[in-house]
Length: 213
Image (cartoon, rainbow, N blue to C red):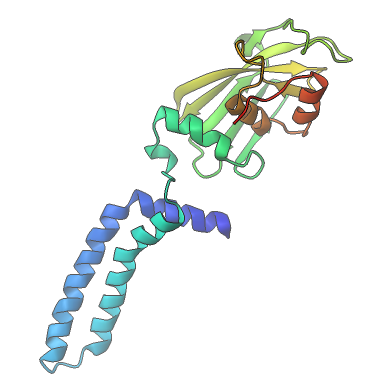
């Protein structure tokens, strides 16, 4: 139910101007009906109903803004806002997709046009023989870098590397060159793809750390 309410509020925020115009129309009709009622014509229920509709349409944008003050629909976000938004999502509950041996695709349930795509063969491979101490320290020392591309409505937005380690048992983002730690945004992308819930354990085994928030 929480997700349904959130979706309704986002829809209201998207069409708030149209809702206010409709509310204004109902207010005008309610005003006319009130004048007729005062003049002696028995249309009190009609005037009341029109006034109720007017209040509903005029107040709904303010209610949605109160409960979700800083939240835009994804389609209204800029590139940087989308990158900032992704780490605020729930990697398990807000995303859905499928992962197979040769490819994976994960999309945001709220707006499926926002999705990650990866290929584990051919041009989807960034490096078949990824070499780094943290990546090759596992029982299966082979590691490979895989491109994970972010799209919105078919438009390419971003590309990151996730490294498949220990025979594909985990996908780990490489640490940043300057800090030596894993970027929080890239970590969250990895969590979205963490179908067997091994990411945090393999980050620990690899002796890697996350950047501060």
